[in-house]
Length: 291
Image (cartoon, rainbow, N blue to C red):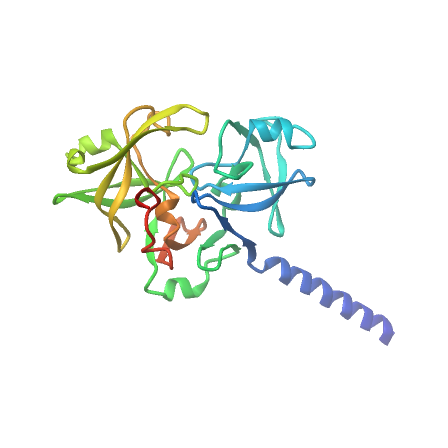
């Protein structure tokens, strides 16, 4: 009888340990390349190892057409069928969508909604992504963090920020887009509505960019005097101005990109719909457009 009880106790102990281990934060190596693309290693459909961009400006899972047709062991059905993608220690269920392009050096991208009901930490000082079951207490207690409410637009994450030029301030919602590799993209129609002196910004260059589906987007890069996110201000920021096709299918929305977002260690709280930002070692790094 004593031996039987000992075995039961051991089994219960092992079970409790496994449950505790599963409930712990999931720490995942996070890679950021020279083009500001952040990505993690993931296993798709239990067999294919991929580099996937964590893109808060999208939802579900997007794989490039080239990867779907030439890299995967089995071509997934688009739009309708759910597949497993393992990120860190956990499996997530998602549909698959297609695109011509994705972040440099990656096979596709996955959206914030895989982490609904969770808290995602992006730590650029330690190069890790951590998926938490709840917001760590120290974040709320740390006054260095700036707290921003999340507004959702068509399932995408927006936060309020302020731009300033020659004494004129505009406060607006920005798409929080870790998949956009530049600093910020300003919508010309919004600038006109706010009487913002965009013509006073010094033009740095003019280029043609391409959207996720390969569509051409004419873009002007100009020097913005001030971009304020929460209580933190970035000065002389080389921002892009949309002059043609809009990335969000006609919506008038500014975009915050990862050349700015990487300057903050971040907690995305999808339980309370709040973002916490604190400057990190990259806060004063030179902008790629100015290097």
